[in-house]
Amino acid sequence: MAQRFAVSYLSKNDFMGANITSTVVTRKDHTLVVAGPYRWVRHPLYTTGTLFFLGFSLVAASWFIALLLILESIVLDRRTSIEERQLVARFGDDYLKYMKQTGRYLPKIQSAP
Image 1 (cartoon, helix red, strand yellow):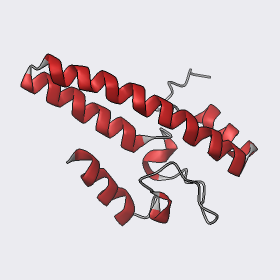
Image 2: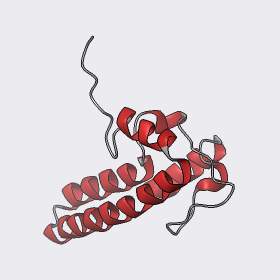
Image 3: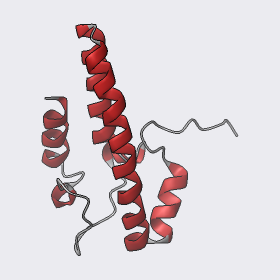
Image 4: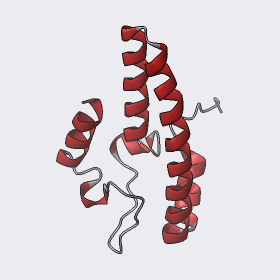
């Protein structure tokens, strides 16, 4: 439910547009999005889903759901690694710079100048 809301919100606000896919695919017309929630984290939909799972496991007080959270996190980490390799291949230095500026799942903490 949270991911559906996030996908709906992000697509309605044109942050991702046609870039959202259900598979690990980088399209020819794929663009690098660094606006909206993507200015803080590279994978806000995965963060949303993981936080939903965490909250659900706490509310349900279920070790089984907590176990699913761990499995989901492992799968997402592998998927994210594949996605990011493809994005580096597609966008090169622009994506590498973006990776240095933003966190993968959580915002990077910037030290004061």
